[in-house]
Amino acid sequence: SQQGEEDPQALSIQEGENATMNCSYKTSINNLQWYRQNSGRGLVHLILIRSNEREKHSGRLRVTLDTSKKSSSLLITASRAADTASYFCATDTGGFKTIFGAGTRLFVKA
Amino acid sequence: SQTIHQWPATLVQPVGSPLSLECTVEGTSNPNLYWYRQAAGRGLQLLFYSVGIGQISSEVPQNLSASRPQDRQFILSSKKLLLSDSGFYLCAWRGGPGITDTQYFGPGTRLTVL
Image (cartoon, rainbow over all chains, first blue to last red; front, side, top):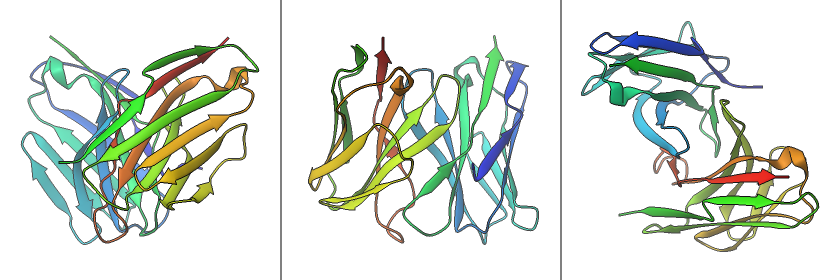
């Protein structure tokens, strides 16, 4: 079964608005990562947050992690049409595998 | 810098034909290597991973196999393709635990089995 599950499955917003995507997971983790995938392409790593961190920023991205609720959120501020993509959370439990969720498809309308 | 290559980019194969997809990594040594399959509009399903030459771990029993003949080469194969093997295949690498937890993905191969 999937370790990470994103919510919502799809999100449509206007350019300039903020986009928030959530991820829930089931077991203890070492870190949680967010990836982006443009249609028909490979995934690109966006940001990694470790289990002892609560918030992290990278440019227009803000990630939070609540280990007590086993959840994370990705906020994209001032979205652009170029942010249109699928976003995946992925969890690392310290072994060799990283488990990916089903993704949130974001569509930003110009 | 590290680079990961996959080929071919697209492939259309008849049912029952063999398959060989290749992935190579440049600029790093002893990477962990991964094969994923992604159905249209869905998440990633881990198929195989390898922590060293000749070491393959299979996650899902299926019609596919993997091999790692060299440190930076990972091959996905099938003797006879099924319709259900259609999908987008992604290769990825990462360092070992404690080295780097980020996975770096290749551009993918879109396989259509007819």
